[in-house]
Length: 476
Image (cartoon, rainbow, N blue to C red):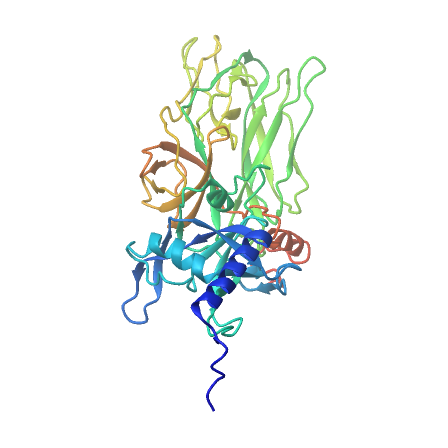
């Protein structure tokens, strides 16, 4: 039976009226989001798996938040890959607005597969939560053909998990959600990002300087007579007191693993004493002091001290310098007489790249004039400002990564999509900015982003099982 001819049943005028009403409602009660179309750069030839994607455009468009009570379901999964937040978001956008506004802007661009509607795999930046969501499904038949036409797209989205995609839209709000430089100065708010590394780089360095004096009756060196074994922590080096008018020496033990002595080191984590370094040789000794090793959980270590006159005293750092990635060479001049035995030692470098102290391995012998101390130069070059998302390359390792953020004050470079392993001491060179600085420290711990608890869980687990041992569940 034919439809009633006296009713229009979906004329273009009726359909346009409904579309205009929907558009107006979304503009009134919706929010402005950014639509990021995916560009397919590289795909596998067989199953068409996407290897490399690019998001370099962001288009503002109004959307109604259908999941108005909060992120849908809000599931958080604990998997072998860590804690994953799978927050869901449902948005409704106007079909007409997409076709008339976004489609003309993207249909002529290369590597865009579908331009006449939103597609699965594209991204949406949600400004209320400062998060990026990935479109998992596009519903185009809801409501179902009112007046014989559809008017909206329902975008069912899931919190985007960043992997190897390149995101550089040029919109600060969108890009800052990825690199973590929000206005509060806190960590990344994208909510689900790939593993990043924080590289502490060294700027233009300053050479460290130090001075020392001469003493008599001081400890020249300490020699190990028995390494002992079974030490699970570094023992304290105890040295007998000097005379009333003197000063007792201070030393520190250096440990070594992998040595089995009388079965004391059956535990692979246990160590023996390799050597002893002088922090302060002391002075005023009239007889050779005794040396003991206290604590550390092991036993058997023994050492003897050797006294001398005309040896160097404690070394004072007058300028810690900057820009050191590794311990520099330390040279004590050989001045003040014949038959002098030169002092030897090495520099202790902080994470910030400055020299904090000089450990003495041999205080020398026979000096009549205090030697001068020469500390090798640090890295004396470096310049530029790294750009967001540019590729940086390690000059020695060839490792590549993409810049997430760069702090010129702290010289910290956060990178993602790391291919390979960086080497401390190599230059990190920016492909676009030509910036280069020497790498001083690598930190692979995840940042505390407020969402994932992986680091907290690992820390708590260490109180239950000692993962410093190779076999935490018992001896072999």
